Length: 254
Image (cartoon, rainbow, N blue to C red; front, side, top):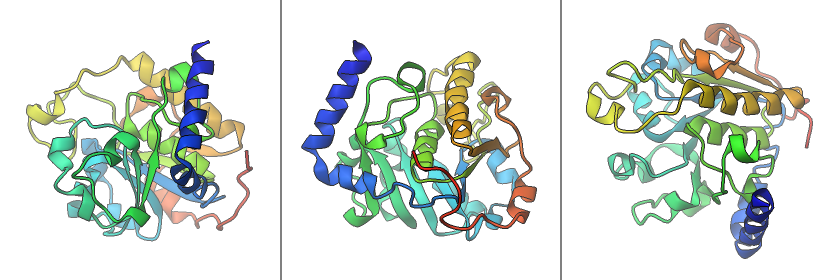
């Protein structure tokens, strides 16, 4: 009954906000057959030569724009925010970032401090339950749930956009160390939230991996940590040395 109620609520929201729904649907297969990189904010992120991402499609989340100080190419194709945790630390920056498209949850878009150009913003409605309760969201215009990391939110959007290959970098999911983000050297920012058990990460990323593989797509971990995700690994430099798949390639539509 709960999944049915959630789905009914989501459909009602889509009808009530047709402009938002059209903007989300315009993303469908925008990058069909291409590859992308999903960047987390773990300390290991800056162990890599981020300048090599020039010309690639990549997603930056939350305070990940600080990687611009570590060689990340200055035009961020996609910037993602899924919740308000840490909002006070980034609200002065986010509206003026060198971002192509903002992909944000409706709760972010409602904040008065969020003021990027409207034509560069795509807003996603909320949905009750995340990957473990509701499964993979093939139609994000119906809403995306809350999961243990924003990377899961970004990955579902990347799938909808048609990427045939998605590579995760800088998602260590190791919160035992004092510094758990590349931009934060102290405990104040790194230890402020309760973290889920490893089993939860494994289940959520398992749902994500199966969704990609069922469509004949690739989802790999090219970072140093993140073993708990249970994803096959690939070498960051080797992936980038491989010619990019042609636009409009073979990722199947769903």
